[in-house]
Image (cartoon, rainbow, N blue to C red; front, side, top):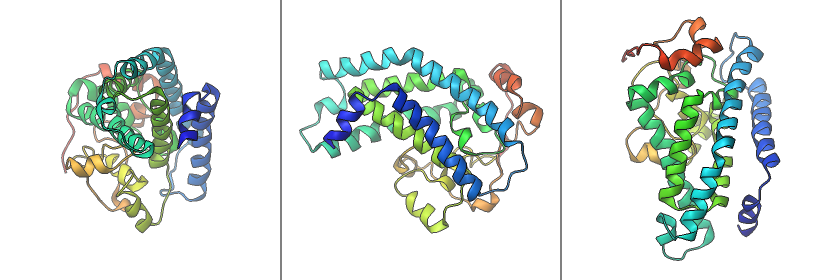
Length: 275
């Protein structure tokens, strides 16, 4: 455990980039070999759009990283935050509690609020317009949403009082987890169900990408599945019945053209249907 802390305390930016690129590459190869759905689409053209949004997310996070570092350092120096007031405990337990809380605020909570708030939904909508969910969809976030999500990560670090090594560990696990649960892979159903009791499995998250309510408003988690189960937002449905996309934007000219995707947050709100 100490070795993990030491590594993430000084993890080079090149290693973080390698994890991001390596994850996409590995899951890309796996989903080509064992696809859940056989898509009829231009995979590279689709990936190009999603990689553009991935790069904008990286750029925004890089530009704002100073705020994250200063906040994490301040909480530790001033003994501020949940972790700073907890009694002494084993390092592994301290780490798990910290990761769970960061995931709650930096992933689950912001995701829930984006779905419940019309203004924020318009930015998050770009992620849901994808009708070919694969590992490149993981970071298909409008630049505006990237800023929103960064703000909640910053809030999480502030409230939790997590040291910077834990933030780097959380961000690394978050990247790999979202690449994994978006990948177009077919795990054995029993294995997927078993994993969903602990982490967000591929089938669990893909239900969130079903094109109609109430499934769109469920399974908000990113790394850990406990929050959906605890707060009653967990849903199941047969993987064979999942239809990707969002019912308000089914036209390929709207969900598969970069210019329109960037403009969606500034277009008139469209109310979704409910099954």
